[in-house]
Length: 167
Image (cartoon, rainbow, N blue to C red; front, side, top):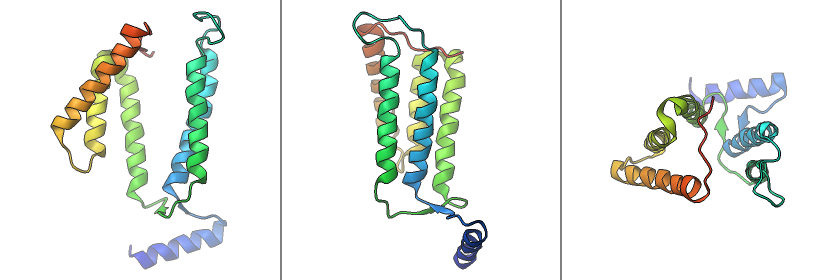
């Protein structure tokens, strides 16, 4: 399909269905993040009430804080000016977004099998190798090990918060 054929196809869709098929990648991503944040807020209802270390913050506080930050960021991204447009049906960028979601699903399902430390390390390495334009494996390994070690130290050793094992 040539570019003129693609343009005619998009114009035909626009005329017949009254919708704009070309969408900004930022707007598409913002919508996905917004929906994720809304689902995340509903999932925080599953967290047991009364599990607090005292004060006003309970077990739901941090997850809801993260969800609120996601909502604010998604709204900011949605209304940001963007000059790049992609074709929703043809663009490789959309495929990349779905592949990243596939990485997240694989991480979720491998988490109970491999445990948090190994699964996170493999997830970071594989995701950075996939997303990097130039793969510098030494740098990717160093960053992945450092991020995993820092998160482990902060949550397990300093805050005594265990990582989820999922299901």
